[in-house]
Amino acid sequence: MNKINAVIVEDSRLARNELKELIKDFAEIKIIGEAENVDDGFKLITELRPDLLFLDINMPEKDGFELLEMLDDVPITIFTTAFDEYAIKSFEYNALDYLLKPINPKRFALAIEKVKQIVADKQTNNERKLALSNQIFIKDGEKCWLVKIEDIYLIEVDGNYSKVFFKDKKAIVAKSLNQIEAKLPEEFFFRANRNQIINIQYATQIDPWFSGNLLVHLPNENKVEISRRQASAFKEKLSL
Image 1 (spheres, helix red, strand yellow):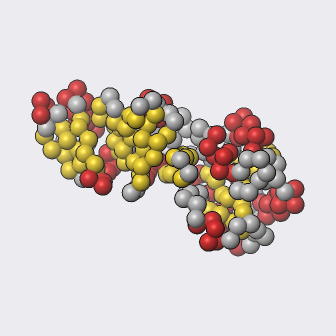
Image 2 (tube, helix red, strand yellow):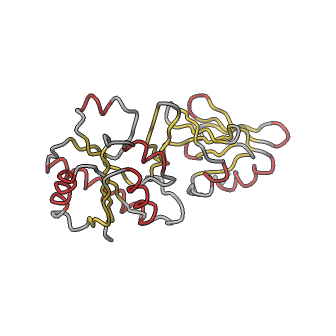
Image 3 (cartoon, one colour):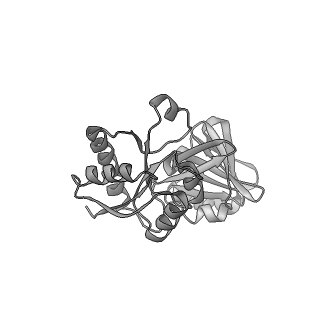
């Protein structure tokens, strides 16, 4: 496996040093940068494009959640926090893992094993596209999520933005449908019509529809119409 490049964003020098000591036991992990605040962390991540981010939640001025909101492409993220377990679960996030301070070495090792598996999966995919195991940050009002690409089953236009449907939730993303489509793995996501993209893995039923169109049934009673123009490509994709 190639080196896993990591960045630490943590306002406490002692906490950064603690992480670096733990990382010494894992030759696969290479620290390529560290920052003590969100703005510096954003610059580092944007310039260096790390595979892995160790991120403190509670920092002065801007917190870790605000950093994730600033990023277009979120690295694999492990939260480091002094919050107790009850508090961390109150956030609607799906980070790879979270480590409570002071960090338990065994818990740290388990988190690194998860990272190694995800990186191995990503290295087999086209680097220009997001892999199913990649995650994106979504913030809608006061709610925030880190969502795996594989959990998204529908994306549709919502004014100048896009609405993303995942599991039993939906949220607005401040990006156009075209911007999102450019990053999605083509083997799983299909442009059904001008306004909607579907994850074909979630198609539970496909019905003939008016004027040569198709009607695709998705989770949570969502239905998407495949335009006649796209119907042939859709059938070919599914080998129908």
